[in-house]
Length: 176
Image (cartoon, rainbow, N blue to C red):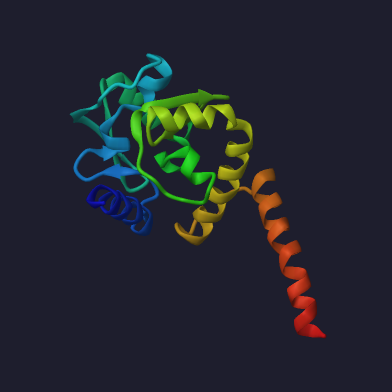
C-alpha cells in the first residue's frame, strides 16, 4: 500500500508541477543530462558532461563532446526531443511524465523519449496514433502552459475541431 501511495504521489507531483518547457532533472539539466545530439550521431543514449553545456529554452543541455554542443548550438530545434523531452506515451494522454533517457526512439528525424523501456515497447505498437494525439496536446500546452504560438499541425487542428463539435450542442441548448 505504501508503494502505491508513493507511486501516485510521484506521478501526480511530476504532472502538477511540470511547467518547464523542457524536462529537466533536479540537478542534471535537460533530459536528465543526456546528450541529445548523440542519439542522432551515435544512435545511443550518452550521458553529457557537466563541463560541456549550452543554455537553450531555459534549460541547461549537456553534451559528451564540444562537437556535439556546437551541432546543437547551430540548430537546436533539430535535436530537442518531442514534447519537451517529457514521456511521449503520457503526452498522448495529455499528461506530463518524467522519462528514462535510455527509452528512446527516432522517427522521421524526431527524438521521442518515454518513461521506461516497457512504456516505449507499448508506445511503439501504436506510435502513429499516439504521436498524432500527443502532437495535438503538446501544441495546446505550448500555447496554454508556455505561452508560445506554434504552427498548428493537423493533429492539433483535429483536436480543436473535435472540442468545438462537442461544445456546439451545449451552446445550442444555452441559446434556446
